[in-house]
Amino acid sequence: METTLVIIKPSAVQRELIGLIVNRFEKKGLVIAGMKMMQLTEEILREHYAHLVDRPFFHFLLKSMMATPVVVMAVKGVNAVEVVRGMTGATNSRKAVPGTIRGDYGMSGQENIVHASDSPENAVIELARFFRPEEIFDYMPLVTPALYEPDELKM
Ligand code: IDP
Ligand code: MG
Image (cartoon, rainbow, N blue to C red; front, side):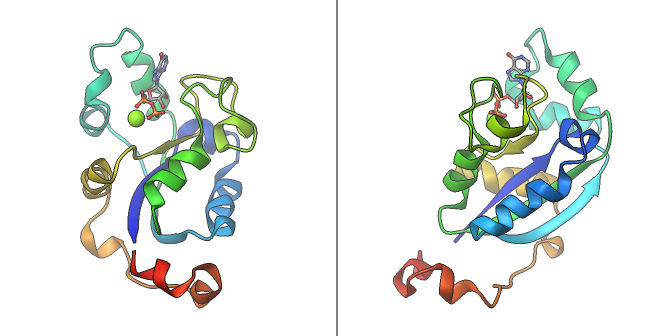
């Protein structure tokens, strides 16, 4: 099983979409292995978005990501990184297809509702950035045998 990082961004917190977004991951069959609210800082954002610090819109991204507290989630399941990225949709919400979270709830490239890790390697790095090890819980809901065929659970 993989665990991936999701951030419910201030754009979604402001629009009162927290519960709805958590519910989408739960209903998909993913496990919420960790979840908390936190205020992001410039320091953590410069690390998290290191690939974008030289882009002209970076100061807008900083302001937008610090506008309210965010909800950070550790989301677990077989191939969770790819599954959650698929549910998230394209970066620009206007181009994200309907049925994805960005496609259903966003109209912006920057204010695009959620962050999701883009590879298993980055998921490990990003989870460690936002969670202490004891904040991610190793449990499986009782419905698990109804969600997967037994061999899939070994993945
Ligand atoms: P991703 O969130 O789909 O992985 P990244 O390229 O990693 O996309 O960009 C991180 C975040 O930076 C995006 O989710 C979005 O909020 C913001 N961003 C990316 N590209 C642009 C842009 O061209 N204009 C404004 N904001 C952008
Ligand atoms: Mg990214």
